[in-house]
Amino acid sequence: MKKLLLGSTALVAGGLMAAPAMAADPIKIGVGGYYQFFVNAGSIEGSYALSQSGNAAFTGAGVNFKGLSLYQEGEIHFTGQSKLDNGTTVGLTVELEGWNSAVSTTAGAGSARQIDEAFLFAFGDWGRVEVGSRDQASYRMYYGLPSAAAVYTGPFQHNSAALFANPVVAAANPTLGGVTFLTIGGQMQDVNRINYFTPRFMGLQIGVGYAPKINVNTAIGGLATGPGAVGGICGFNDATAAVVCATNDYSYQDFFDVGANYLNKFGDVTVAAFGSFMYASFVPGYAPLASASNPVTGANLTSWKQWVVGLQLGWNGFTVGGSYSYDNLGVGSNYYTGVDNDNRKWGAGIMYETGPWQMSFEWRGVYNNNGNGSGSICGVAVGTSAITACALPAGNTNTNNAAFGNNPANGALAFGGLTTNMLQAAANYALGPGIKMIGGVNYYNSTGPSNATAQQSWSVFLGMDLRF
Image (cartoon, rainbow, N blue to C red; front, top):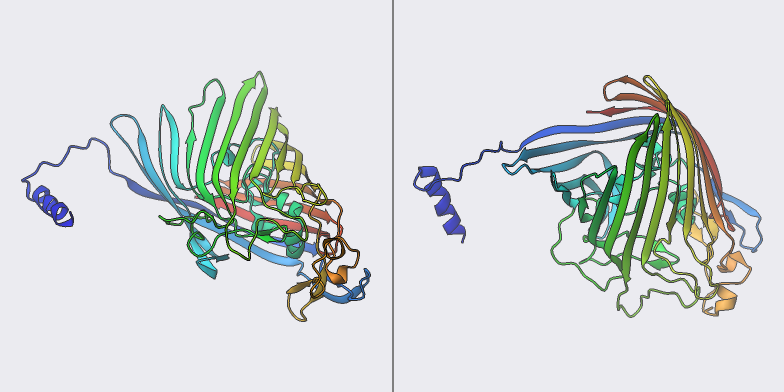
């Protein structure tokens, strides 16, 4: 076959075989992207270890966090397209990271990714289709909470790495991570998928998406999710290539999402409404020492479900809006407590725009019933940020004593709701085309039943966002 193709190419080059006529211009790649740099100054409450005596006294050992940080993030986008004779435009986008992001994957812990999204697209009177590593369709259709700092800590184009809060608590309290985004599917962006958007008709547009597999590569409820060496690349956030994907490897699969938004104007009032739903099935594995449930604690993994509704109203420079969302985090209700572990997220805000200025104030609240309970921190390695969770007593497998006892030094789970509330006042000023100065104040307050789940933090941030 290879020889045949080479021979055909030679015939075309020599003029012995006619090449098909192409009226459309060939694809030419253009360069775009963004870059942002921010200074955060504030305070993050540290994490402290419980004493081994089992009471709530502090040992003095802890992880403290610096109150001043410099943050940068950016991408260079290579995009090209060509319009065919039938009116359809076909193109591609590859997004190169403008910074090094250390990630941990089955392909190699600590490897640095360089490519973010990479996908093909086509659009015309029939709608738009995208194939490749891309945010899911309904994720980008969000309308709800308005924010003048949307490109930095917004509810839609969220940047979880910009969270100025205790990362130890963020790992133990899912509401702290949940507050970073209010749209759908924020944990699983850029997975290889197919998206389709209908044309907008009388203000209404529908988007649907499908991804064969999702590799969130996290541990939830004390149960490790994420596949092994073969399946690890499949469903990983950011552009990857894999032909063969494992099935029975404790991963979320057959991800489906559907969303719709409605845009219209009635007199001087603009209306934007949004609704979406996503579902992914959980496929357990058959390893003899692994399980999709924990018989000691009652934690279990199940199908992942999310849904979001949002509304925005605009009038005379003012925009008010909010949203409500539900996310079961792929975790079922605890077998013993019967209580769920779902995030329920609210957001409301107001923004005013005049000339080059935008100013906003917002609130976000995330609540979780915490049916699986929360562990505690019993130790911190001196001179590091490495924590030690309270362990079960050696040989103790009794459910009531181990999981539901009252001694944190013996690894007992603490029960009670988890919450995070966020307040933000922000403003931005357009210095020129694609150049904005952005600043504001963030406040985060997380609560929970153990020392691993509670923190307060605040920061004043100032920076620039460049688009090119």
